[in-house]
Image (tube, rainbow, N blue to C red; front, top):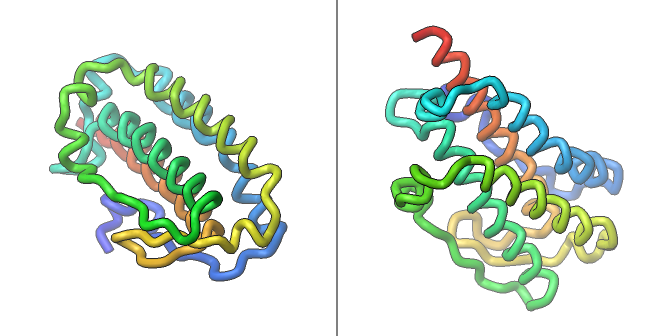
Length: 175
């Protein structure tokens, strides 16, 4: 495992999380965007082009990716709540990151989107029963997963990319 690419390690799901473990995951969601904002608050616009590793995405690309990914994750989650084991689509993250909006749209737009989206997601999660978290979806990358695993992956994915942003900021300081 490349520690520069995966600074917090790979995703390791809990097969059957307890109600308390699930609650702790959900409680992390509101702090995600706050933490991201704190990290990039003091950065200049040109600092946003710094990457966490050679060949890796810039801070700006990571922030826009988080907004895109979390929108997709939220929609997949809602589909799994309203359809029987939906087959969810994936997307070419690498190609999305090369599109012009990742370069031209201010990251504030994606941060605001993340805050709003995470608020909506929390409203959805707060009324879910343990049975609802056992509903499933079929993904191209992971196969059939429960909403419990999808929630864990959602939180891990955000922490994973925040750790990459922190690595990019540290790397920028070493340059």
